[in-house]
Amino acid sequence: MLRALRTQPVLSSIRMMSSSSQPGTTVTASLIVKSSDLASAISLDTQDAFPQVFATARLVALMEIASARALKPLLQPGQLSVGVSINMTHSAPTPLDAEVTAEATYRGREDKTHVFDVVARDGGGEVGKAVHRRAIINAERLEQGAKKRVEAVQGLK
Image 1: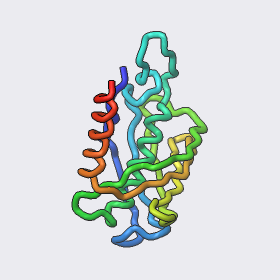
Image 2: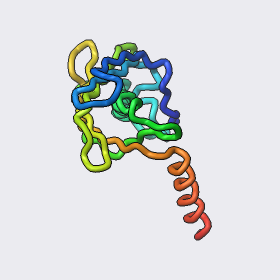
Image 3: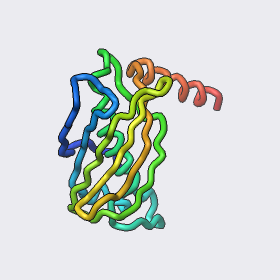
């Protein structure tokens, strides 16, 4: 069964160089791998088979959380940041009950996106790395646009 990504309990620590996001700002987000974080938990069908190690989808989510936290000082009321792209390598498995930490380092702004280098580690060392891009958006506008887009398609059926 596919479960919604949880952000609690996510242990976190934030190390920022200033009150605004500047190149070099580093933010971390950590979690203890629970059964709901395992690749085996993302099955949609009993015929799906995945190992009982930290899921790549959850690693991406942890990397996004760390990166999004770095942009908080730039947000105006009603704004959020959203992931635009991620080029990620999941290089090593992490077992149940291990702690995983994603460290996002803000590279700066390129056009309309904010770029991060992200490295994830567990007790055994590096488990993944990524280049992640985020955009700052008006949350209400995004949600309304998503709703209209789906309703328009459904109306054509």
